[in-house]
Amino acid sequence: MKQRQASARPGPSYKIRPGKSGSAKNKSALAERCKLAAASEPAKSRAGTAHEESRERGALLVEEGVCVILLQPREKLTFFGKCVLTCLYGSVKVLGLTINSNEISYELFSPKTHAPLAIEALKQKKTCKKSKEIRMEARQLLRGYLSLDCRRAVMANFKSSCSILLLERLEDTTVNYILSHPEYSSIFGADLKHTPAVSDPVLRSIGVHSCDPEAAVTMSAEVVSAAQQLVSACLEEDNGCPIILICGPKNVGKSTFSRYLINQVLQHIPCIDYLDCDPGQTEFTPPGCISLLRITKPVLGPPYTQQREPHKMVYYGEVSCEENLERLLESVKYVMTSYKREQPLIINTMGWVRGFGLLLLIDLIHLLSPSHIVQMAIKDKNAIEPLTPEYVRSSTGLMTKGQSQAQCRSLDLSDEEGQEDSYHSYYKASRGYDLIQIESSFSGAGDTKNIPCHNWILRDLAMLGYISKLQQFDPDQIIPLNALLPYEVPFNAVAVRVIHADVAPSHIMYSANASWVGLCHILDDIRSQDSGPVLLTQTPICDCLGFGKIYVYSIM
Image (cartoon, rainbow, N blue to C red; front, side):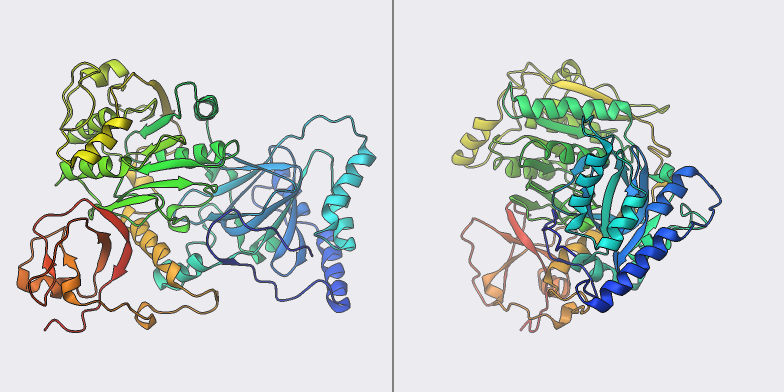
């Protein structure tokens, strides 16, 4: 069997293949499995639809942990679990990403904490080729991946309109580390609520649990049209690289739309920048951060499977900004000074859009001067005022005044002169923006009772996803944190600040011991006057280099 190409997802992953298809013994067993799979009749599910039956007939076992499926145009495989997807013939779409034959393999993560992913076959382009030529072309594409007997089994059910997919079992370092914690050991398993009474054993054998297609998040025509409009803006660059701000209340699909848009844009340009202004539900970093990232790979899983290295990051230190709105705005301003407007930018905002949350959102719009605003609302529920340019321009935020365009430039800057010049070089008076309004129509939109998973659980998973980077490249061995070799530094070489509470100086190191900490770099030349650490009286806004856990061996 042909070695698959490098995955589109960053980070180490492993595919388990106990046997090779090269030996005579394995080839014989492989041929037998293919014949049995091709001849077997699928059990009737409680739904009993032709859609399910056609998919059951198309699921063929290639070898342990590897199978092939055939999908007709617009047919979907909706699933919980994880796998590596390679399109052998035709094309499919996953969360806005079109995957064609002869492309790299993609790793798909579809846990029960989120709505399931759906692999949808696309309609083939019209061709003048005869049926015989099409079948010969399909056989040629399969030749590098499948044995002769498997190719025959696949071609027995092949139609010129279908797509042929290779699905492989995925063993991933991040997922394995998360699954090693008992409370999260089943998040990639089947969801009994959406799983049919009789599921495909071949798919189950590679970690794919098919479920009701209606359970997947579907993009309405309105969402698809909005994404196409934004992709066109990214390609045309008539007024420079677009800055796209996405806003709306909680649980309306902002994150899903962001991933969909990222995947759409990356099909046309090599990268896109992403500003995360939501410390409570971060997309690519641990919680409590304001970050700027350059995204070069599609996003085909939830945040805790997509932890990536930020270009610039500030550790805000809280998942809610209600107690210190000004520091959040200053953190956003600090991070955005690194954005050079050489790539399109997507801005993720919080779901807090009432009261002070709306004022904060107005401040962000004044500060960041977006070229497009995507305002997502909830169907049949009271929505906030449409954020038209006229409304925002005349509105007063927490830190900005609603005046003329020339006056709605930014927050009052008290930073050093160099940073002020850098800030003003990028954020000039707003020239207006295009407002795109989207009405969320999926079931349960805006209702926090219907979310698959609580936010605090997702934050814990994001932290575990980040910590998993410390694991070795061995999927079968999980190394406990206390078994890893720590770095040792003297107390007087660090400065310490407890963000979330007031702690007496004599108790600082006790509270820091065994705590999750942001590892930051402050520009000020601060030195300790004794053997202890510098105790900061204010929370600095500075670069966060990463995270760690403190072990205080001696506080004397």
